[in-house]
Length: 169
Image: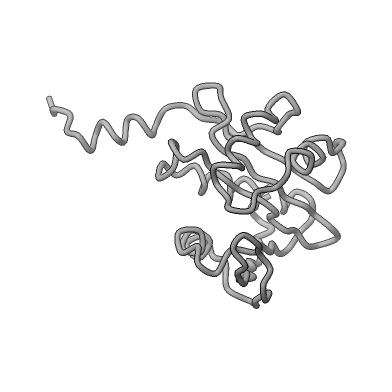
């Protein structure tokens, strides 16, 4: 019989059940806390509420990653015609480095394909190396830059895109 090592305990902790669900208005407070702790220039509570209030069939898709029944991360995606844009994605600080951002990103890609999108775009702070690395790992490429896109502090955005695989649908 094999004995557990510290690394095994870490893997077992990360294997706990999580699920990604359509985000609901009742999750607003938890999602907003994640937003505030994740970004220097966060979305307003009203902006998140507006996204969560989108009706079924609207082009805005909001998902929450639930860990032990509580939101540990979220994503907000918009689809229009054959394009999609990942508007927001964040994971609670205490749940980072567990693969949850990858799970949310993969879910967003599948959702975009289900909406008929063939490409996904996103913007990321030029200095956010962790996020850029995540996106590159998932097949996103840099396609442009938006000068002074971000505030607090002022910073350029790197525009990234990925051609989505329709067979993932």
